[in-house]
Image (cartoon, rainbow over all chains, first blue to last red; front, side):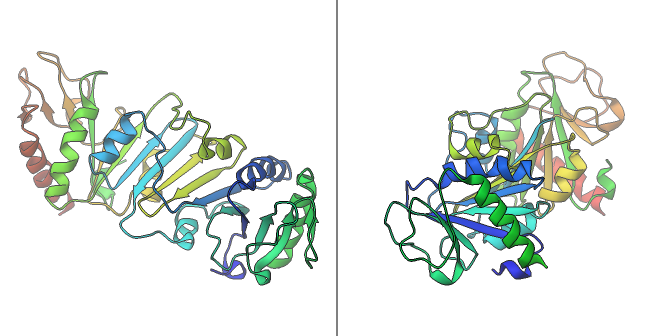
Length: 169
Length: 169
């Protein structure tokens, strides 16, 4: 995984559990869209999730053993695929997320992707310094990377735009 | 749309609302899998659906405006994509369902795909005769196509295997 060799720039949002990664994504996505970017999100979880616990058709068909179930409506397409082996982020991006301007990743903390870390007050970053692009939090104890206030989502979006355009050049 | 020009055979399961299309699919899929087939299902709905009404992350990220949200776990991959225009069945198959042995379609009744129709007792088929491969029901009033008892899912699977192998040759 190397952002420099992709067609689409990839940035991971990392942080301890409960640090507010999803909330940051939820606020960052509309700002990036207002700036004209098409945005994809890839989220990884180590445990199985249950998108549709209600016994609806999607679940019935997946449980019947379909390898892939695709639901389409005029407004959305949902594709559910059983994984025989772990699916890598590269595969997810190559197959499903190629046609956007930026892929924001939540999870996959171990991969050498450029990262923005959401920090609790005074906490040291979890991720290794060589992939850390910046931090979001109230203070950044001695870190040589830009810090963004949690309220300054515009500033973070502008920074991401700038960094990504350099990386793509 | 023409099954003869696809890499993967496509058969639609059609029938009136409440005729038991999803139940038939639910029973047919494991039989086809036991016969060694990889199976995909494509389902179309004219109204928006709500896979995840619980305020979970998937919904939060989609509502924030992400064009695509991909969730992966060791067991499955779920990709949710906003549609700007209606997505055709051809596009769904080409992008997402190519690597299976058969695509079973529910909905898309208007497309000229080979069809199996689930019939209520004594009812005439909904779909045009020239794409009708067979019917499932307790009787088939004067139809020149094979009829399968709703309980005979093995028979239907064997028939599909045979028809599809002819069409692929």
